[in-house]
Image 1: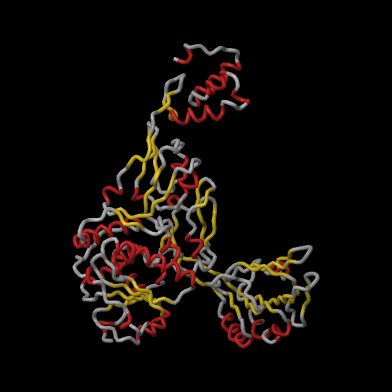
Image 2 (image 1 turned 90 degrees about the vertical axis):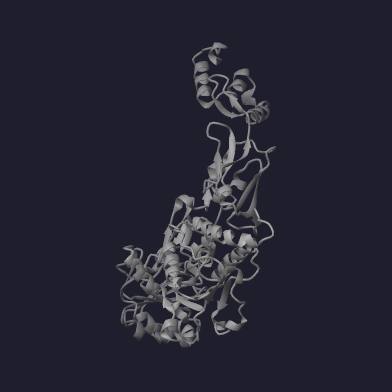
Length: 551
């Protein structure tokens, strides 16, 4: 490759671009503090003894796992190293803060406390027990799992380097107010939890929490998030899109090649021509539908992503790839615009389909995204549809999407719906709204993320999700009425407070209940909340409701 064809480092070039824009170059920092004290886990003491001299430099505690041990036992070796024999061990944490709790039939013992660790934790862990005590696909920093004995010595040497203070960016931003994870104790979207390879994301209240010490910045959570509640922060989405646009502005490339630093050697070995722009990014899994569509809308005709990731991360990228192609097929584009290329196939460019010819006529666009994921996607699709719709025999109004897609409509069975509005209170994206002063259920399709919370909340099972994409952005943003009804007015103050249907159904259901056998109790069902309370107090005070009171 000549100098003009050298891959560009996204991290370095983005930092320079952000500096010129007077924006922060990165997000806040996360710091790890480690003295290097190692917890050595083995099934036999002899395995640990072979490596104690190496690890004792920074301190070491040994745990021997013996499921048949009747109780937790502790002994001190001649060199002062503590050795615990335990039937069961619970291990959590990260570099500088690993918690190890031994468990037997009668007690739990915090091993760091038992060996008087001032920090209350172990700094690093060498796990040689045969089965990893940390099950996540991406292990936390400071944890080394040795499945084979001949790798232990090398891991010991590597762990000796984990002494001091280590910083990394806080890779994510999270906005609870638009998270669709949960409402009213109903389960909605859990995509970020499902795809997290480090176990950093967990449910917390109606949203989620992210442990920044476990997060390793793969960005898959941001890629699959339907609302943009979870977003990548290094770089931020808008910065990533604009920097790539700037890179491609004077380029003749029709293909964008995304790869991460671990694949630098393979990319360097390629003889890339001017039609391919290689771009080094922090993590390819952090770039999803909003980024891809923004670049396909006038800048490139094909995106190739070099992947070497966990099965869960790969599945997440494939789901987003499938959604991209469903949307483009709705515009008549049958060719594949995005390709996930395993690193072992990186030399097989001839096997890839050609760039999408229909995208060649797209004018380069520069719409502003403001880090709003759904707005970015819609703006990009507006640009694409304006050009590609002209090629169709007749314009399409909507494109059906697969179940689970983050776009769609809500269908309401008006004969079953009582306008209780439980769906409105659970909708996290304000797609469903009430009728203000009138009993009505209204809907904004562009806001709907198809999380299913409304469907679960409906006591009448009157709601059905319809995954689709409406191409007319003006229509998709309009407030439409799904159901309305005649209001029922309080028989005392005449304020509208429910619908005729709700009052009729409630009266019919409660009429046989023992609490509503007297005339006054049934009459109160037809009062608003304030008047109902006043009527109860009046009756308790010995007053008699008159026709005048109800006028």
